[in-house]
Length: 169
Image 1: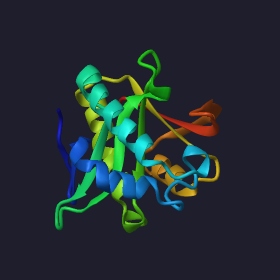
Image 2: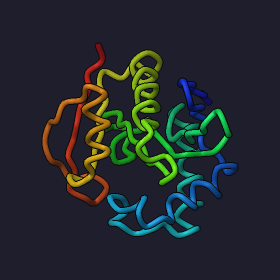
Image 3: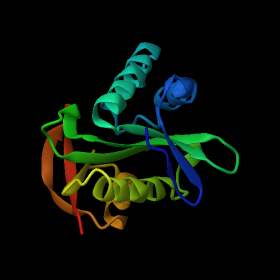
Image 4: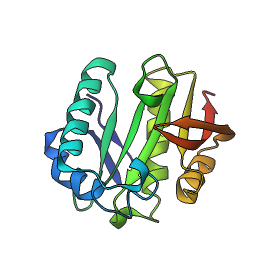
């Protein structure tokens, strides 16, 4: 499993060791505003997510990374390379989710840039997409910072989403 490094973060594949921090983040109402229909995750849902993520690492060789701040070893979020809607026949998707302690510090952009490079250089994805709730200005800002271009609105993860796309150089 691939560990990525940025100036301030270590991106390590999600395992059972990340459950507590992941559940704390995913049960925060503010973190979940634009995810899961705005509902916090239950413990069972987070445990199922960890199992699913670990399975995808085994099957695909990529999935969700825990974003660990290297100066203090605190997990500040999650970011991913996966297939859109969890369907291997769909395009590669990048995504992120930050704990409140990580908001506004550029961690999502930093992690996403490393994941895009991995998607293009290692996975050889021809392009990546990212989706977000149309009101999620922070995520849309990350997408535009990465050079992604808006391609329209589509339904993903049971929600209407803006879709952004970035071609491999």
